[in-house]
Amino acid sequence: MKRARFFFALILLFSMATLIPHDDAFAQRDDRFGSAFRSAVNNQILNPRRSRNREPVYGMDGQAARISIEKYRKSFEKETPPSTVLIPVAGMGGGGS
Image 1: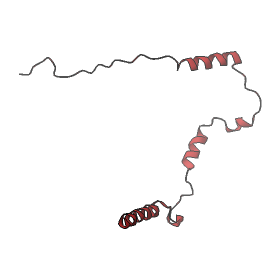
Image 2 (image 1 turned 90 degrees about the vertical axis):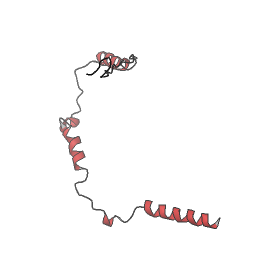
Image 3 (image 1 turned 60 degrees about the vertical axis):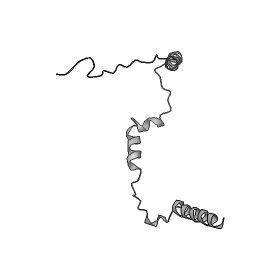
Image 4 (image 1 turned 60 degrees about the horizontal axis):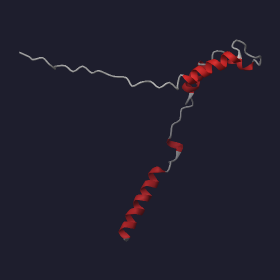
């Protein structure tokens, strides 16, 4: 019984020592870490100054927008039948020389 407790404590101590984060002095961090992600996000914005414009956007009325959203939601309700896949198998029905 004492031996089992000793091994359990040893395994617990070893696992805690490996899971506890060590000193960050050895970790080399780049000052530009994450800049590629931020750059990709910023490049997707067509007009960054557009958010400062508080005028309403005109173009699609409420009824047309509601109908398009309803059609979009109904498109997910349709159940598609399972597709049949035919796999050709070579070498059937024929003989060699």
